Length: 177
Length: 69
Image 1: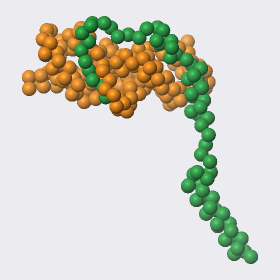
Image 2: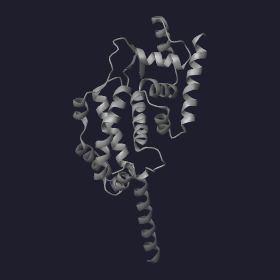
Image 3: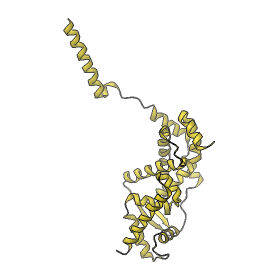
Image 4: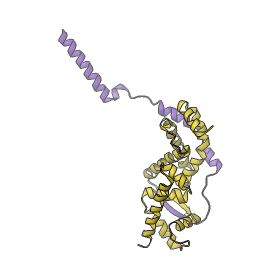
């Protein structure tokens, strides 16, 4: 059964939401797990919270041609951001070496970086505004495609690309300052 | 607050299937959903607007009764 068919059924009977839950739980858990730096307990709670919000507002869901998962990603994204704002502890998000290299190439900062330059880059990432951080995280650390990012924000793929490249351009400009 | 750090171990941080399954529980979600939608309504005496409305209605009826006498 397709997602759209299940959504129609779930609007009438919430038990059908269980199929969507089974279908997307792992995906959303993995997404949140990476975003909260591998904190298992918080990932479990936030995933459950995401599905609770989705289940209680399924009536408002409109099929606008985006995949159902992008709606769940959007709710999860909001939940994670609320969590970041509410928590007093610093959440450390680890970035792998190859992810840094991908970011370097896309930002035209070269393909090799010394350790001190890498530290500088990390510092620059940490000083970005939250919405820019989100975009960089989704593209380079969650490794989502432009299409997937566009679906989450309900924008066109070209627009998603433009927003990300604007952040990279800003990073590039600030690099030599 | 989030802070990016460099992972020098080059190990991918992915949750295991067991970790995911530990939290996957649709019956718990259904239970939480039921609790959320069937939340008891505010009692009358705790709703100041409704209380005032009922009080005024009572007062008007009382005055009307008093006038007709």
